[in-house]
Amino acid sequence: MTTLPSSKIPSYRITLFFGPEVHETDSDVLYCVFNVKKRSWKGGIQLVVEMTRTQAARLNRLLQVETWLQNVLLHLPQHEYDEYFQRGQELFLQYLCRTKLQLAINQGLRRETPLLSQDVLTPELEKAIQESDHALKEYVLTELDVPGLE
Image (cartoon, rainbow, N blue to C red):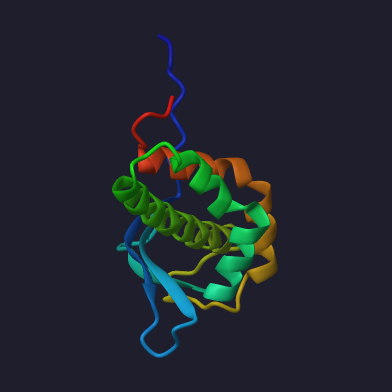
């Protein structure tokens, strides 16, 4: 009898609940809310991941995401271009938040953690985003599903 190797089941199941949104009391803070479930937990949690606009803009400039996105969408009619560009910016911010969440998981996220504030994991996030430049752009392209791209 042969035994098939079992596929590795991820420890966490992460789903974007909503975001990015602007914080009610501080317009410089953006956030995404994720549902996070670990296999060993009885239930999942909703976790808020914050980031400042300044930090997001810095990463955007560093990776030239805006310029890259403009070039990718150049062939679209103006009304479609605007829609896709806005959505691409949202996807970029979601990717940043999800990467920050993954960094927290890698460091041992606890179930009691309801918030990753804008001031935690900042240098780690910058390093991770620079290292995953290609993955970020691939994610944005996949999610955008831009017509006319091969």
